[in-house]
Amino acid sequence: MRPIAILALAAIVGSCAPADQPATEQDAAAPALTLAALAGTWTMQTVLDTPDSTVVDYTMSGGDDPGSWTITLPDRDPMPVRITVAGDSVVFDIGPFESVIRAGVMTVTRGVGRLSEGRMIGTLIVHYETTEPDSVVYARFEGSRTP
Image (cartoon, rainbow, N blue to C red; front, side, top):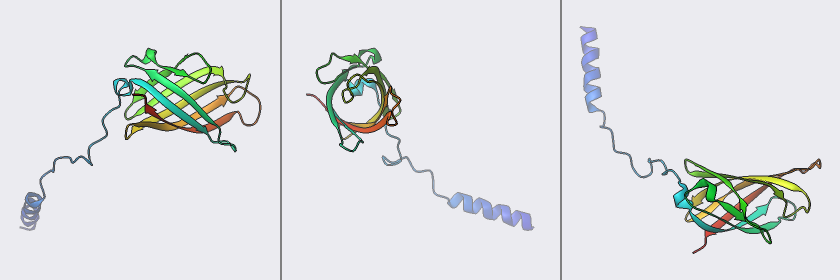
């Protein structure tokens, strides 16, 4: 008798449980980012996390083809950018190229960004090809699409 009562109680409790609710906007994952959503020219600014907070302004542009992306640093020719999107993020690699900050020193840079309210924001890791202790510098970047 006891097992039947337990099974009956479980059936009653189970039938009283709320039905699955549809996912709300808050529950939904952010839509995947695409190169097409990033396509265009971006006016960018990077602030290096150094004692003098050096600022570098530049443009980054491209389309929905990953091979079309370039970055143009001040007084430089456009350089290719290796770009990938994954989930809600864009990852890009640049270089090696001569540093804008350290004349004659080659650098490789990796950035990770996201779109936030129409702006591209993120962080960079700058690797200087040097034996000095400060061969890695971290930075923040932000940019807006050029109309």
